[in-house]
Amino acid sequence: MDYLISRKHYLLLLLVIGLFFINLGTNQVFAPNESFYADAALNMLKTGNYLIPIYNDHIRLAKPPLLYWLIALSFKIFGVSSFSLRLPSALAGTFCVLFTYYFGEKITKNLGLYGAIATGMALEFVSNARYASPEVLFCFFISSSIYFLYFYLKSQKIYYLLASMIFSSLAMLTKGPVGVFIVGFVGFWYIVLENPKLLKDYKLYMAFVIAILVGSIWYIEVLNSPYKELLIYKFYVENIKRINDLESDPWYFYLKDTIVSFAPFSIVLYLFFLNLKSLKTIKLPSVWFFSLLFVFSLIKMKIPTYLMPAYPAMGFIVGINSLTKRYFKYSFWTLFGIGLLVYYSLILFILPSIEAYRPYKKMGEVIRLYKNHKPVYYEGYFIHQLPFYADTTIKKFAKYSKPGILITETPCAQSLWQGYVYTDSESRFLVFLKDIYKFKKGDIKDSKFKKFFICNYN
View 1 (cartoon, one colour):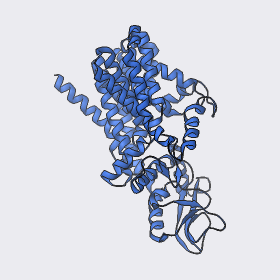
View 2: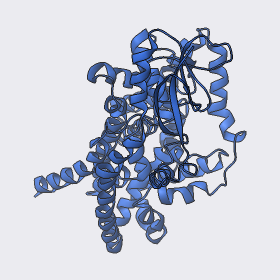
View 3: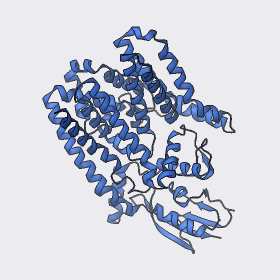
């Protein structure tokens, strides 16, 4: 019977994991963030410089380079493509789902299944597992570190603490010191509530310090390079200024945003107050979710993906609600079926259809064909994907620029290519689809599509 249950579980998890891989390489690189990772990783392969990420001749030190390294490795093994670009994120999503399943099953039978499905099907999670960004990778490292820390606290086996330390260091190499501090913060409050005596365990503090030191290796190397001042500035902006000095969002931002970001199971998550007694049986996920929700709500600058490291904990809360209340259980499986139908419809039909309105690869081919060592310029709107697809640096056009290839919205006598390009963020996907609909109807002026020309500039 257990074998049959396991087979059923794996089949359900396979349906979720399939969301990350099916048609993964169908779409060309999205703008702007995927373009940064694609071009910088390709430059690493070409130059052999894996220390400093460079996009279109611009240094990128806002984030540590682990994702750049993984994408470069994927390019090396599988060739340069949009599939291999996104493969590290898809694999991170897969391992995050599987680790969440394993951990949850260790706590309560079937909790892992519900938690893994809720995590893996969250809208923000699926979107980023199919996209070259550090968010899902960061979530995987954070959650894995917390899982192994829990196992250490329960068993006192040192190899669990070592694993937790390694994963938190990897989280730091993905998005900075916050990777170690999140694990330490969640672990501290869990120990305070569960067994305060463990606060005397000196090995926990040693692991925390070592994790920071290991995660700091890249920072130390860059500080000994000519880019020291730029790194210090970027570190300040990314890790300190965001807390209090950048744009301010209301304290309830995540309470509102999670309704969409954690869909389709956000309604089951938010009804936890009808099942407060059961939260005591999953103390670690409860501490994990509520502590991160509290801290990130205090930070002035709020972005939906900031809360993603708490998604596995949120999945377990959904799971315990579904296991203890029959109406939650029915709601869960109904939402599961509807969610799969919507996701697979989007992946199999909608995503392939938008490629007719994304000519970036063709533009890159034209530039590579005609540039013949000439410089390439842009005038007006900058198309972020072109440095990657044209495999060249694209500079801003100036009055006395040397003869070369010019990408412009102005018609020219020697046009090598002409066509329409979307000039807004494709990450706002529903807005993008709406603009495609307007464009198809002929309402071009209101659609944010503009006509571009690739010209010989003499």
